[in-house]
Amino acid sequence: MRKHSWIVALVAVAMTLVPETALASTLSTSDDGPVAFGGGHYTVTGHSSFFIFTAKANETGGATGRLIWASAPYAYDALINCLVVVGGNAFMSGYITHSNDPQVPPGSSVDFGVKDDDASPRSVDLISQVDFRFNEICTTFHEPPIYPLDRGLIEVRRGDPDITAAH
Image 1 (cartoon, rainbow, N blue to C red):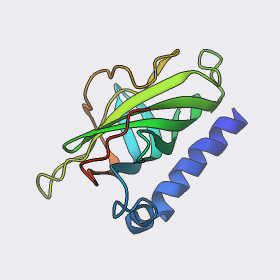
Image 2 (image 1 turned 60 degrees about the vertical axis):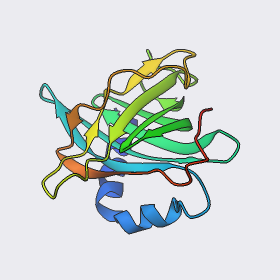
Image 3 (image 1 turned 90 degrees about the vertical axis):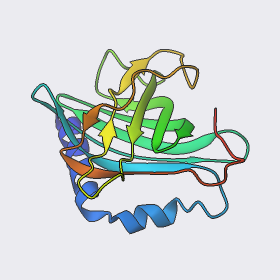
Image 4 (image 1 turned 180 degrees about the vertical axis):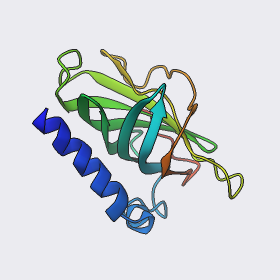
């Protein structure tokens, strides 16, 4: 439980202290392909989840990034190696590196999608269910992002149209 509390606190602090401009500057699209980054809090049927992620495509067809996701009593840390951007949506997958959930050990795969909804000033960014699978990286993606953020920000940038990341 102590490790979970530490990760939740880290995500909460990162969300309040790391300004959007700092994330954006580390993920510049000026010389690379698509990027997606963000963090926030959302609630599904009364259950809260916190997350922060970055993903950046590269010219070799891969991606680099990280996801930290916490939903009591569990917390997960993953490396992202796949990013697919379609319009304002980004779909990512990778491998768990740390977890306090015995059902999702390190090495398990994770995938999720986000929607950067900049359509209007009152728009709300969305996230999908964060799915844990085994040995399914960047082959299929599940449901679209449907859960609105209670608080947070998601940015998706297409970058160079000739660079699309797979894995």
